[in-house]
Each structure stands twice: as C-alpha cells, then as structure tokens.
Image (cartoon, rainbow, N blue to C red; front, side, top):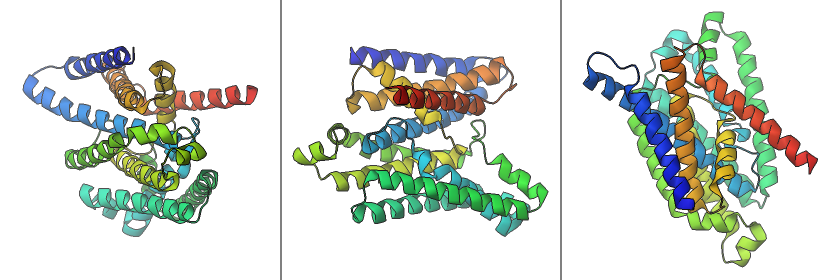
Length: 313
C-alpha cells in the first residue's frame, strides 16, 4: 500500500512535469525544453529541500505544526538582504554577483543555525527552549530589518521588498547547480538516517532506551535541516508556510509514520505542488497572480486549522 502511494505520487509529479515542459511551447523546442528543464530542476530541488527539512524538523521537535521557518530563517534572510543594500547601496548590491551573494546568504544562515543549535543543545536545553529562542531571534531580526529599512533610500527599499517574497520564476543557473549539489548531499545524509528518524520520533526517553544518543542525533539532524533550509531560501527566497502545507498533505496520505515512505512522498508532493502551481499560473493564468502568494496563503490556512484542531481536543 505504501509503495502504491509512492507510485501514484511519482505519476502525479511526472504528469505535472510533462505539462510544465510542453504546455504552450512554441518555436525552437530544443531551446524551450532546455530552458524549462532548468526551471523544473529548480522547482524540484526547492520542493525537496523544503519538504525534507520540514519533516525532519517536526520529527526532532515532536510537533507537526512547527516548521524550520519558525526558527527565524526567513527573518535572517531578509535582514541579510537589508544589510547588503544598506552597506553597498542598491547598485552595489545588484552588481555584487550571484555567487558571492549566494555564498554570503547560505554561509550566514547555516553558521547562525549551527551556533544556535550547538550552544543550546550542548548545555542540555530542551527543544522547547530551542524553538522559543529561534522565535525570539526571528522577532529580533525582523525588528532590525525594519529599522534599517526606515533609514535607507526608498528606491533601495524597493529592492529589499523584492527579496521578501519567494521567486520561483528566476533562478540563476550557476546557483542552481551549486544548490542542487548541496541539497543532494544533505538529502543523502538525511536518507541514511531515516531509521534513526523513526526512533527519534518515538520521543527522547524512548530513543535513549533504544540505544540512540538523542541529543547528538538531534544536533546532526538539525544541522542537515539548516543546510536544506538555507540553500532553498538563498535560491528562491523565504517560504514560511509551504513546508507546513506539504507536511500536512503528506501525513494525511502516507498511511504510515516510517520515514522511508514519508520522506520521498513529501518530496514528490512538494515538487508536484510547485510544478503544477507554476504551470497553472504561468501557462493558464498568464501570471495574473503569484504561485508563492497562493501557496503561502494555503499554508497559513492549514496552520490555523491545525492550531484550532489541537486546541479543540
């Protein structure tokens, strides 16, 4: 039954990919397919990174209404964009280059996450304190970004605003291959720990009783989560509720809690939503609205639904 669900999800992703590659294509097909294939790869990479990082983060924290964005990754990304514009000016930030910008963004986000995880977990703090600390840092980063935004030129503020929303239509091809390699490496390491994720999902005391060093395993898993979130955010921008939407759909149709099924299923669901949504809004609706806004809106509704359902129990 689990394999059947994976096959159906793979078929849905294949159908969405074929429509994305062929629908509305005119002129030189080889050029059109090559151009769209790069964008398809970008959507698949971002979808997989968001889905796997969310599933792993929820497993470690033992809470299905949390996402890595709650740790302040999106706020840190916006603060980095704001500080770059404030320090270099609008023209300087625009001419910085895609590779240096990508390196700065991913390096700072991964570094900040690793420092936070290492300091708190090494001192024996529980995951609840870790999450609360992440929320506080997120509020701090947003406040600092808002302060700097009031000090910069209005034209430069428009550049910062452009980075506040996910951009699924424009991904630099040089960054795409770097992001793909980093995502593949982190996903491979996470896949190797799929059985340990099953044990961690049972809770700290149970995991320790079964011979798992829970705190060390949590640090390793959160480090992989930090890499996946940082790469996806640097590639397309912040996505706050998309992972929650994917997680809710995946757990609703998986029929199991085993990560050997949940991880690949979540990646297929996430990629299908992104590719199918982009096809709909780009080919059918002609960019009348943004797929990122719609997806984030649906994710927000799912978040409220989960909150109300939990409080009603």
